[in-house]
Image (cartoon, rainbow, N blue to C red; front, side, top):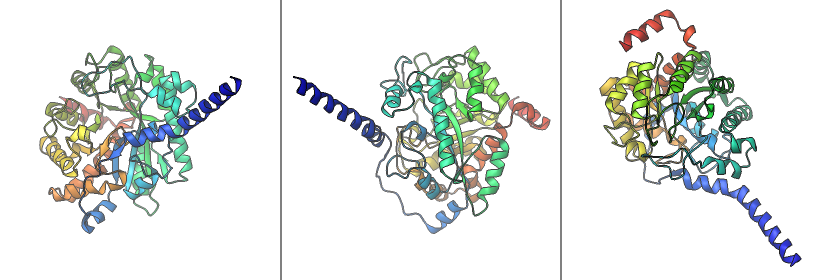
Length: 404
């Protein structure tokens, strides 16, 4: 009996070791996929233009996974080597701290959480197993470590001057990739305004108020109540603007989006998603919401996955860009891949040139393509990362006039 128990214990230990070593990677491989559908050959003209662009992606969830951004792997969507191959100039990495069991686009409870098990399986620090705030701070530390490990290949972007400096560096032979830390849902605040200071100090410069469930700040597009901003949510929006943190409306309910747009004094972004005119799913923006974002001087980050575009063909992304351009102007269209966000795409970050080529084939001018692929996002980052009280008076007055 004793030998049996010892043998059983050994088997349990071996199984546990195997779980912690292999399970996180296996799960990611099953979650972040390339669909394998054919892609056109890239023309020399498209590649030449693409190589001259500053490319900005407003949203990736790579920090959620066990691997390091500096690791070169053959799964998932984003790592340093593939960002370099795709000529990415600035990548925004978002922190996902909680997702509901049975996650869907229509209705989710806030009572369950998938990420806790993922944190345990990845052997993250024990405090991250029970605290959403600690989980988010762990993601911030992970990004900081990646920048250090990159030995100059990546650089943190925390201010408007960092954005300007990155533009200058990208124009030279040495082309570091800018990285910025954001959040998908501020349930991590745990109802305390002071926790926003903690996240700001950790490097967070953009945040969506909600993710797939309603929280203390607002209703989610995918929540049960789908309500508007709460009093706490209104205060946090104002605090974010004052600090120079960009408000992201992705995943917010239609009522919450309306509330945010009425309240906004700064450019608002939708970091990743689509437009209902092209793909009529609940999570995508209506024309009135697109107009509202444009009125703040903000941008719409357009994704490449089926849930946002009702397909993964790059031509559909070009179609969505055209709709935004025709409705409110090219200066409000941008890219928001949702890479590594439990989505399936046609290509990974190394293949983003397919968007450039699709825009060329759709008849967009070079100036329009430069704006969509990164120019618009760089403008909004320069504006949005400036604390409100430091804005020139003329900018404040122009914003007020635009909103009237």
